[in-house]
Amino acid sequence: MATGGAPRRPGAALGPTLLIGVLVTGCAAGTTDGRTDGRGGSPSASATPHRPSPSATPPEALCARIVAHWAREVLDGGTYGDYQSMGLSNGQYDVLRAVVDAARAEKERAGPTAAERLIVRRARADCRELYRSGGPGGGPWS
View 1 (cartoon, rainbow, N blue to C red):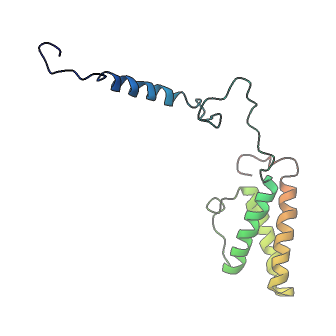
View 2 (cartoon, rainbow, N blue to C red):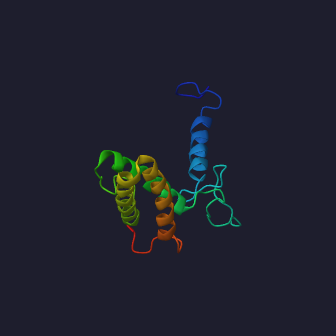
């Protein structure tokens, strides 16, 4: 027992020490930019720079998917939303408007099934063209 005070429990000082150790270790688990090595630790010096996974969907395919989705919505609902609320860039929105214009004409001429086929075909082609050189190049919103 300690003199002049409450009795000390064995290992009582261990609690704060462990807490500090956990906090320090936890803070060191990632880098300043938030990256980790997949196990919670910092990437090693020999780690390769971040590159998209070979299985990542190409941007032109994502563009075609989202443009086709919104083209169907606009064709059915008859009205556009704000391109940002739709999750589109300005360039993708331009593609959307062209696809919808063509799909409306095709729907009147040949019916809804033909319009659906046109949406898919035209969204793929126009998005491929938009991303032909690796991505839009007219500023951050293109």
